[in-house]
Length: 398
Ligand code: SF4
Image (cartoon, rainbow, N blue to C red; front, side, top):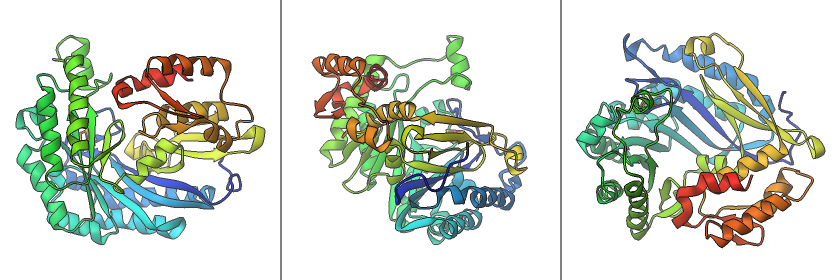
């Protein structure tokens, strides 16, 4: 199904996501589309050929995003800080030329400490990047070794400082908590130490063990030490308490920001905005139809870089009806501290019926009684103390 350019009351907002699929090494917990650049050599990545392929895809898909205001461009991966700033900048320029980009567009690049220094940060700034998201993951060497990361704690701190010295306007740091042997206090202290470097945004993710990863395989064989659930819950709350005391807003389960520093790109996902996904393994989403036909389409590009660069069609294209989109809005909206307004979502999705089905109303009352949600009219949100059960809560409201 091809997204139509005349389907939505303009102007609607959209983001652009660009996937860069190479890393220096594959981390044992990672289930993203990412490939270790060796055994050849990172220099062997054909940076220009990959940018050409992304631009070709951009030119082909841009007409379907006519009338959208692009508020964010996000380079994720993989490790896009391995991409030469020249080629990455060519993609930014292409997006700016092809789409209606807002004047204050947020342009973010995910970086690893092993491929970010002051010169690289300056070059990215010159290429039009205004925000870096640095994969710090931990400030303790033994934790980084467990995670299979190539950097150590001092390398992580050096990368954050280099980004700031280069004058990058916005710098975010990623942390992983819930590691075996890590206490709640240790997790909290890492988050505060990172914040105290001067960051205005932090993402604090709980380690999850995914099947198909090295950790997943070890866990299946009972050979991976696992964190205690109670300690992980305590760590989540300890990080929340420490960062909110420092003036950060805990605006999404895993994300903290000083006022005005929220990641606009991710806010778009959680709101249900459209996104133009470009690159190997990227997902994209566009709205389709109107009235009874209203829905959307999600596609996924080929996960093999060679196949992607060879111009192979998306490996999957999934039509989504309005009810499915509403369930996605519930799942994603409940991740935000402000929750979501179900009536607004239903109207915007042209659901054509009340979202308050008898089953959902019953589930909502049950959840309210147990303080798993708070409800104000048609707005529902999850209080922080119940955030750890968000997936279950959302599923009950499907
Ligand atoms: S650096 Fe990030 S994307 Fe690359 S393998 Fe590690 S976790 Fe995955």
